[in-house]
Image (cartoon, rainbow over all chains, first blue to last red; front, side, top):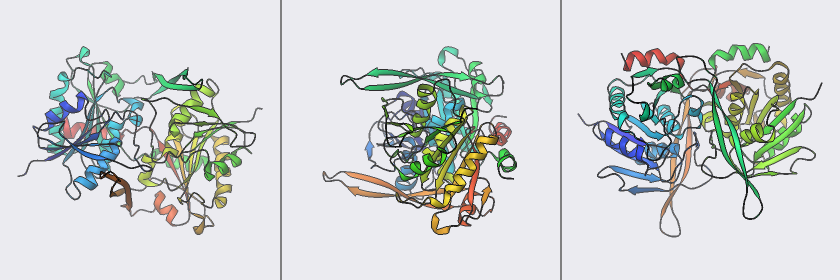
Length: 256
Length: 256
């Protein structure tokens, strides 16, 4: 039997520490193709490049592994892999990350890491986004290796429900050892931005976006709780944005 | 009683035809603030600007209406409006669009128009994204005016279920008159990209992303069906990406 084909991407860029470790781990599990952004793409969500051109270049960042860097977003990378590089051959698994920084709760909607996983799920490719709750470029990842390998292996063996990909977050290493895995929902939370207003050398105003994370969720069945309590969180995440529960309610409330 | 405050944005940019009409319509319903991108931002999904600076400039694009153009994405515009321009005053309604092009089905995940609406919903601001299924910059919008006004008025009067915003799509005018409104789910569909490969004047390869829309949904309770049959579609759309139905299944399948 041929080895499974595993597609690797991320949103921190092909030179980040997280994707290096992820590629090393999954190269033990199958044949690997890396297609990742050539520069950091954090916060790009499900953005695609439609009004501009894309570049795709073979790289030797990873020893002996078929790899490309792309000028576009994480979702562009997945689309180029699916429909240009691989064409009719479908990957058996996509892994994205390991992201430097949390993608729990509402952060999932801004996350290029998870958008790449959802983009794979649209084509029925089992997919996992891995994130570490530590933004540092030099973050310590070693405590997550066995979890990344174990979860990837399980998904390769057993698949994943259709239309769903896994959003996996790990506590930072200072909170290690990880106590186990909690399969749960995204916490209800939001960001409250504080715009840092500055004046450029030409006298014009500009802003940096910054913000505080506000957890509005008192439950214990969500990803923020899991991380705060030393567990890895696994949220089944979907690209169907329909609120099925609200269809009848909106009909009755607004259109009857 | 003071007039309701209505925030207007889009993803085609502040100079597009669709936002001009939308601003005219809602300025009859309340006090209007426009904060929109200074250039086209189609396909930006829920992207935010985190690694770069933002500009925000007062404009006179709309006569007598408080309006700003922003160098960032549609979601940046909403964040600047919420947390910088308005601060503690919360809009009573956000309207986004009218988009030049369909945001039905899977296109919702790539849509800056709908991301802006979801970003408002995160802060419990009732929000509607309006899109016309016609990509032309000179698209004919007049057949949708009464629907935009009527749906906006209803949401101002009656609100919207928490955590949900409305994804409203209209058939192109050649299919008019619109037969009515269908409240429904997003169709199951995907894009199959064809990358147009070219060589630049320096001998280097580059790509344009193009693609075909593939409808995989035979149902009649979805937005693609509604539009194809001459109705406006209204999909209650949410920022909670958790597949609640899959939590137990993923637990049993992978972690038991």
